[in-house]
Length: 124
Image: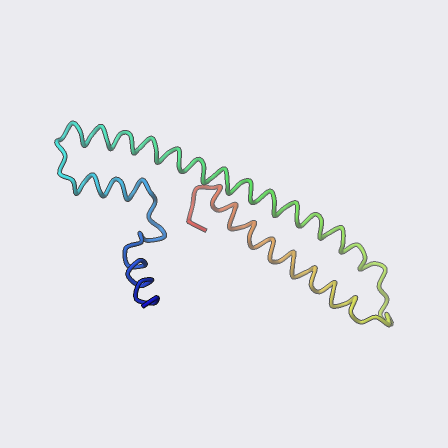
């Protein structure tokens, strides 16, 4: 029963890549409005679409800055690498350093996706 209900709900959800403005625009096109009303609605949706894009781009820029700040913190922690010697008895220190490098890679990947959103491209 639960799977069936979820399947019915999922079937009615909009495509992930379709924005609210696009769904409204499609609904207006299907509503069969007269020309003047349709033009006014489309003009309003054009403005809303520009605002939606600006919000998405601002969020992408904010996220990119957060990833940069996270990388700066991890780079400071990586300064401990200079204190390690090849004969370090605590091998877990090397694993911690490896984890920090992986963190930089992960933050950089997220930052790149966020910068792409800030550029107004993709739904990353």
